[in-house]
Image (cartoon, rainbow, N blue to C red; front, side, top):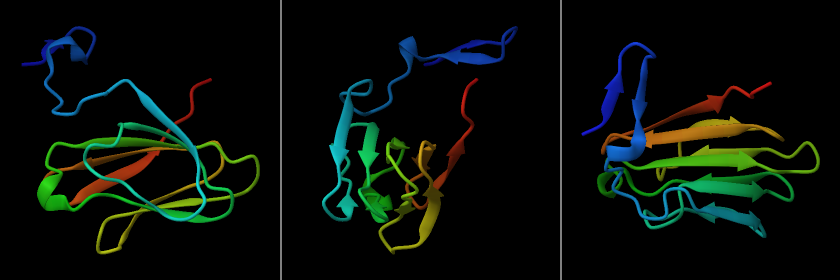
Length: 117
């Protein structure tokens, strides 16, 4: 069970079972082509698309409770289109942006995370 700190409005992750191994490990990769993620992939994906590329999320039926955080590390104006396996677009990630995708077992939901500072 997560620990909720109501005074600060946040949840402590120290007791949350996220169901994914290597949660805080990251994959850093320059993409040679489109990338299809699988449920055993690392949560944090630092990707240089090296041109416009698609990143396809795993099938929803096997992804309930899974999350991915995808960071576009492009050196130029190169977008990553994050797609579910249908392939419908979940969101588009521009250079130096980061997105989160969360699955409820039937649908991937996602969006761009605000940049700090």
